[in-house]
Amino acid sequence: MPNRKRILLIEDDAEIARLLEAELGEAGYEVDWAPSGMQGLVKLRESPPNLIILDLGLPDIDGAEIARRAKQNGDLPIIVLTATDAVERKVQLLLGGADDYLTKPFHPAELLARIQVQLRKSEGGEVRRVGALEIAVEARRVTHEGKEISLSPKEFALLELLSSRPGRVFSRDEIARHIWGHPLESNSNVVDVHVANLRAKLRDAGAYGYLRTVRGVGYALRQPKT
Image (cartoon, rainbow, N blue to C red):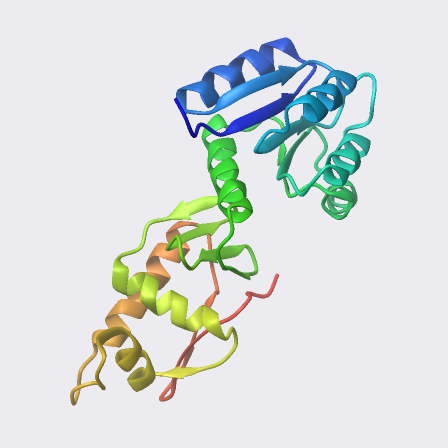
């Protein structure tokens, strides 16, 4: 299959590696498995992949060191698999070159979603980020914490407008002109209905508090308080 994305899997646990190879292969990816950090670096030099899945706890080389070396060969997306849930370690990983991480155990479907997000980023196009919410403008895709949110064309247009200037309050007329090309008719609640639908879909995806209502004025997208 021409255009298949290649993933380098650096994982010393053979059982986990076989499971991931099967899941990724079924999803249409070509997988190159390296059971050690040194073999992973060799494969990286010989045939650079589109993305790296990297186990942090390798027996020969620390995963963070491999991530650092991999970034020296180009800005390849790196998803780290780690057994630790410590915030300090996660921050260290992200600052050290990892693009995303998953804490073991995890569901393969979540890994597949995160792979898609990272590959889209690496392929270019504007991606807006507000908190854990990501809006890929050209691809017209929205994710929260790596999980895709399915929006209607008008719901996406609404979110795209609000995300163009996070924190700014857009009036109902501004929103109507952007989405429908004309101002609101008298007593129309069409904008409010679409905002309510968008808010519900964000909430269902675990994205709480992103949409702000300013009574009598309009709506804004904001990073929620943690």
